[in-house]
Amino acid sequence: MAEPETPVAPPKPAGPVRVYRHRLPARIWHWVNAAALLVLLMSGLMIFNAHPRLYWGEYGANFDRAWLVIGSTPDSGYLRIGDYQIETTGVLGRWTDAQGVAKTWAFPGWATIPTSYSLADGRRWHLLFAWALSIGLALYMLWTLFGGHLRKDLHVRRAEWSSRHIWHDVKDHARLRFPKGEAAARYGILQKLSYIGVIFVALPLMIATGLTMSPGMNAAWPWLLDIFGGRQSARSIHFITAWALVAFFLVHIAMVLLAGPVNELRSMVTGWFRLPPEREEAA
Amino acid sequence: MSDILLPRRQLIARAGGLIAAAGTLPLLSGCDAINDAPAVRKILAMGEEMNRASQRALIERGALAREFTRADLSPYFRPNGTRLPAGADYSAHAASGFADWRVRVSGLVARPLSLSMADIRSMPQRTQITRHDCVEGWSAIGQWTGVQLSRILAAARVKDSAGYIVFRCADRLGDALYYESCDMVDARHPQTILAWALNDAVLPIANGAPLRLRIERQLGYKHAKYVTAIEAVASLDGIGAGRGGYWEDRIDYEWYAGI
Image 1 (spheres, rainbow over the protein chains, first blue to last red):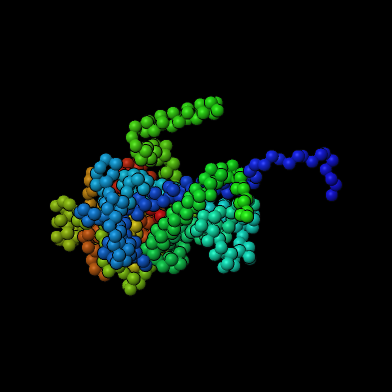
Image 2 (cartoon, rainbow over the protein chains, first blue to last red):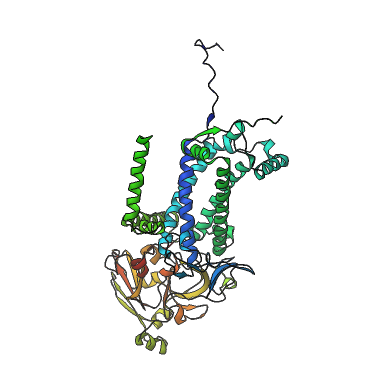
C-alpha cells in the first residue's frame, strides 16, 4: 500500500461524526408505510364502528357471543372484554362530537376516516390504502432480504441471542441509557427483533387476516380460513394486531423522542445520522 | 435566514388558505373536505377497480365458496335490511303463501318467462350451507335451497349480448324499490341460486320470502331479497343511477363486493 502522495489533511476540528444510516429504500418505505398505516388504522376504526363486536370462529352476529364489545347505555359508553366491563364514556361507545352532539358509535369521530359515520367511505380508504401497504411491504421485504438490509442491519448475530445480552439491552432501555458513539449507528437487539417482528410478522398478518375476511378470497384460497380458524377469528386477529402495531408505534415514538428527535428524524429524511458523542468515562 | 423564512411563510399562508377554502372549519372538517373532494373520490374509487380486476384474475370462475355442515349453522340467522316489505300487495302475497307470486325473466333473452313459485320448485334444486358476510362485518351460516340462476337463464335462453343480470325486488327503501346486479361470471356460478328455503323451512319474510338471491362470493347487500324480476342487460347505464345497485347508487358501496 503506497502512502498517498498528497499531504495528509490536518485532523478535522472536533464535531459530530456523521454516518449514513438509512438508505433511500428504507426512508421511502418508512414514510409511505407510516402514512398508509395511519389511514388504514383510522378507516379501520370506521369499519369497526359498523359492527363493534368481535367473535371467535367462522360466524358471529348480534345474537352470538362476542368476546369484545364496545357499546352504550342511555348515559354511558363501555368496553367489554370477556366478562370484564369498564366504563369508557367520552371516549368509546358514547362521546360528544365537535358540535356537542352525543354519539354512540364505538370509536369517536377524531379517530376515524371520515369523521362522521360512513361505512362505504371508510371501506374505500381502507381497501385502497391496503394496496399501498401490500405493494410497499412486498417490495421492502425483497429489498430487506436481497438488498442487504437483513444481512447488514437486522441480522441478529449469534452473540446477541444470549439471554444476558438481551437482558442487558432491556435494562439499558428501562434506564433510558441509549448507545453512544459507534454503537449508536447499529440497531440493538430489541430494535432488530421489533423491526423484524413488524416487517415479517405483524404486517403480513394484517394483510393475511384482511384477505381472510374477503368472501372472494375465501373461494380462491380457502386454506386462509383454516389457518386463522374462520372469518370472524380472522377479524378478531386483524383487530388485535392493529393495536399491537399501535403499541409498537407508541414505543417507537417514545424512543425517538428520548434518543433525540431532531437527529432521528433527520436521519429518516436525509439518511445522515450524527453519532452521539461517547460518554465521558467516569473516573 | 430571511430568504429561507419567506417562502416558508408563503407556504404556511398558502396552506392556511387551503384550510380556509375547505370551509373555515376545524381541522377535522378539513379531513372530511378531502374525503368529499371529487378528485379524491375518483382516486378512492380506483381501489374497487383494482380489487375487482385482481380478484377476477386470481379466483377461478367456478371456484366455490366454502360449504359447511349442519353442525356449523348459526343458532339464529340474523336478518338485515328490509325485514317486512311495506304495502298491501306484499301483505296479500304473504297472506296467500305467495301462491300468486311471479318472477319475470326479461331483457336480453330469447324466451321471456314468468315463473310461479311452483315452477321454481319444480326445477332441479341445489342445497348449500354457506356463510353470509355482511359489509358491516358480521357473519352467519345458513342452509339454502333453491334453483341455480344459470338454469333459469338457460331456460330463458339468455343472449350472448347480456353482460349483467339485474334483480328487481319488492321492498321499498326510501325512494326506490331495492335492486342489485351481477356480471355473467357470478350469474352462471354454480352456487348462485334463487333460494326459497332457509335451514329446511320455507324462507321467512325477514330473510326475503318468497325468493332471494344467494351470490356466495360477495357481501350481503348483493343478495337481493323479495325478488320479483330478473333482467338481462348489456350495460348498467340505464339501471338506477347507473352503478348497478340501490346502495351503490346512493352511498357508494362497491358494486364488486368480493372483499
